Amino acid sequence: MDLLPKSPKEFGSIDYWEKFFQQRGKKAFEWYGTYLELCGLLHKYIKPREKVLVIGCGNSELSEQLYDVGYQDIVNIDISEVVIKQMKERNASRRPQMSFLKMDMTQMEFPDASFQVVLDKGTLDAVLTDEEEKTLQQVDRMLAEVGRVLQVGGRYLCISLAQAHVLKKAVGHFSREGWMVRVHQVANSQDQLLEAEPRFSLPVFAFIMTKFRPVPGSALQIFELCAQEQGKPVRLESAERLAEAVRERQQYVWLCSQLYRKAGLGNVSLDLCSGDTGEPRYTLHVVDSPTVKPSRDSHFAIFIIPQGRETEWLFGMEEGRKQLAASAGFRRLITVALHRGQQYEGMDSIQAELSARVMELAPAGMPAQQQVPFLSVGGDIGVRTVQHQDCSPLSGDYVIEDVQGDDRHYFRRLIFLSNRNVVQSEARLLKDVSHRAQKKRRRDRKKQQPANTPEDLPAAPGQPTDKSYLCCEHHKAMVAGLALLRDPELLLARPHYDVIMFDVDSKDPTLGMSCPPPAFVAQPFLQKVKSILTPEGVFILNLVCRDLGLKDSVLAGLKAVFPLLYVRRIEGEVNEILFCQPHPERKLATPELLEMAQALEQTLRKPGKGWDDTYVLSDMLKTVKIV
Image 1 (cartoon, rainbow, N blue to C red):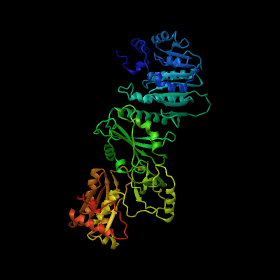
Image 2: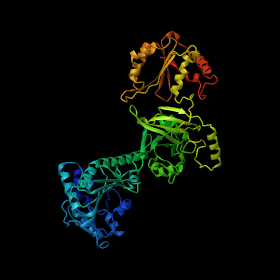
Image 3: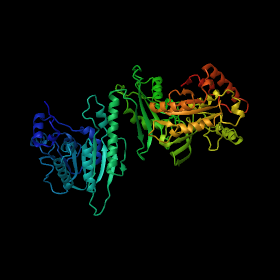
């Protein structure tokens, strides 16, 4: 038997509801949840002794169950004579003080200010099926009647899916009347979406519209959102921002339902924000590994990325996160990055804060009461200390911060906040070996340290840097390109331009080339570079270009000026290091090039010269190819 209307407009028809309840009989029909699912919210906003009007009551058991727990001053109205008769017969002896009346809610017969609460479970949604003029006029009459029969301080409590047009109409109407507007997400609505066959595809919300006494000339409007996990509402600045916040909650719940039903949705990421400030606090990435064999302990895990390490390839790139998830051995891994500017007490407090939220992202098939492991590197959350922050006219807001690496070294980094996951520049800090620092360390060792306190002291603003350190693979490759010099001694002895290096960031995000700016590869500019380069010299360029057509054009322009062109691609990155020389007859075969790299390294390793032992120059040139 099909009880659904042929058109949503039939929800506003008396004939449709008469037929609906005749066909359904006495079996209760619950819109948007049962009493057990809604009772927490209802008890929060309705007091037992208040006089309650339920509009569009249907044959729901909600009023009956409210009555049975002490809410006995309840009046129910509905447009269907069939359902009112059913409800009177069902409750006459058991609930004698509760009344059921056939009445049109757009023309109610009650005196003004008769009730302290008007309760609506799905009725506004059923009436407001579209935004045609006739429908909007009917809803205006309905809401006007709700306002008329409520006392000052009374509340219109409307259970709704908060579809955009419904939210806009309800919020707009009551805010213009000077009422306080609050939207509260129903706590159990997400669980309903995670059912194998969900009853509806959106979370359930309650509109709580509180009637204030009109104040002539006052333009005060109050908008609040109370999400299911929050104990207190958040004040929002406008109806538009409230609608946006509700839409974000709907999208989040929809995403959770999709993640629950199927794996492999692609690169899924989301920010979790502070309930107090609205600022992003955590960034989550969902990584599925369908090749992992299912077992009781391999379903789901959370990986906390230590502060300052979110830019590393393993954590900051999609392919890196896939590799991390596969090596961890879980079907689904959630990586969690901690935001700068936020305070974190430690791993235990983060786990307590995230436990409930991340479980909403769990896959189907999780065993009941399954303990979800929280993983990290080294068992702590890392160290991040901001040394300076300011705003650049060219690049916007930036921050200079010290972070601790996995080898206990500290690194000082420059981050442009417009691209906060990219390290613009990085220096390795040398340990402070001064007499004063050594005495302080000896004193500190005698003190009992907390479990998560790093052994090394945080870096100080004036701490010296390791001048031999290169942080980026493409920088190491650029240095390795100096092996193209026939005589590495030239590098140390002559003040001429034997080498010219470009690693220049473009500020135009509309281009498919983020390094260098187009002017640096224009023909007149390249000719000037050639004119100041010695005949045996090398011009080294970091090229970052995602537009293949543009890249071909740049390479052709370079070859026109520098006929001998080597390229070294950086694995896992877009960067390509180009080694450009003016004379093609100086071309080197790979074995000869590697020998020259070894000779260059021996020259640079001379006593008194700083050198980073973590990489070998010749290794950087093994994959070099001639364009």
